[in-house]
Length: 573
Image (cartoon, rainbow, N blue to C red; front, side, top):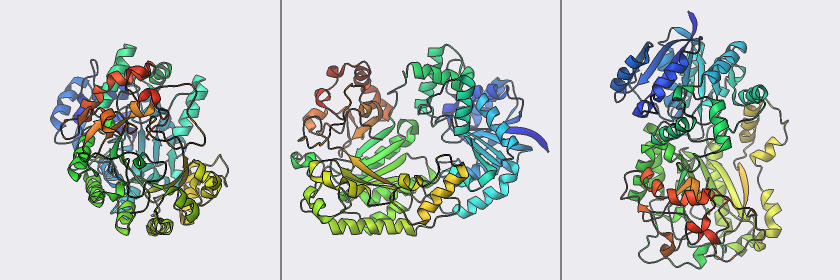
């Protein structure tokens, strides 16, 4: 048995072959692999759509690369990814396999590989993951992990749990698994004498947006794609993050524009919805949104099912959740975040939430006793809402936590709002549930990866199901809503609007607007309609002048409400 490493390049979509200068991502990986003496055979996992173009580019690389035709293209479902590795490991002739993560990674960095492989050999790991930033993730698996992967596959069936990722699964290997991101970061800081920013999202998911980011980077540096490395990219972007605003991180979808029991700080108490303005987003608009998101996942990594109104009042809400579950099994979809005030959190909706496709649910509870609740929700029934939430948490608690899972989906956050009516209730609210952060304060800060996983599992085994309690500020909605803030947290020095730079806003009728804070139709100035566009890129490009004005601090040159807004520092994500 050879001690070399087999490199697997997951070229499962044609973006790998899009030109970036005189190279493409596929050629760059092959060239970089040639600088790693530990790497032996190189393979390319191809689909029926990429096989032909891959074979054409293999001829140009000057290095033997063996294409492997996949019968099933991997998705972000962890079972799909595990099957992807199983099919390859059982046919390779080396001890080790290395690969960029399929679906999420776009680049192979030689230094990252060498560091990861040395740690794997040194510590006798069966599996290693390393993530310097999104899109540059490396995985190494030893062939002896094959029986364990097959065990994982059986154990997880069926699984549509969005919170379950590969690192959660591999962490059950305990000391045979190495999660090296933090170790690599400290190695980098010690070696270079300076940190690097590990929060760049531009290279995640291989698609039009990530290719555009690589083109800008290589052009700015004047070097070929194959010469990029962590040091060069981070140094450039820390000096001038000119990729900021190049693509949205998320889409905010207004599922409902009405609420039968709005809180006192809601603009719905003053705004009268025009008759022509749909109360609820139709299913056809939501499905078009999902279709566009699937075209280029890098353009829409998260979807927030939110709105001015109460999303769960939408009669099509359950159908929307079921559509998400259907898509998750066989496709790539963004991370889904749901919002509700809990009044319509029926058993049916709660059951759909705990199926696992939804990553998080944020519930605007505001108070944990009837007296304070009535101050905020006139006409609301606190005891009914509390019962709905407890039933939801009970369903989540009853969900089997398999040995490879550290937490059951979805993540739950309960929120309150810092206004005068609730000021004397904030401490009581924040003590109402055992959150994850409070739980971890019981333990040492320098826990190992294995200890962190076990501590997390102990948290859930103890029955704790509310991961976060959140204090929110009340919004004036760019001076369209009465100011109920007790404290104004707006920074003294203004910077670019985090909502404008990172999120697309889709209203109930499918119109795409600049911001959710501009809720009055005359001031919304739609830039398009989701039913009439072919891609999110199409409308995102129309907002480029506005984003550029914000980046250059020309706020008066954007929209009439921007100058009056004090929420520009609050991102949607």
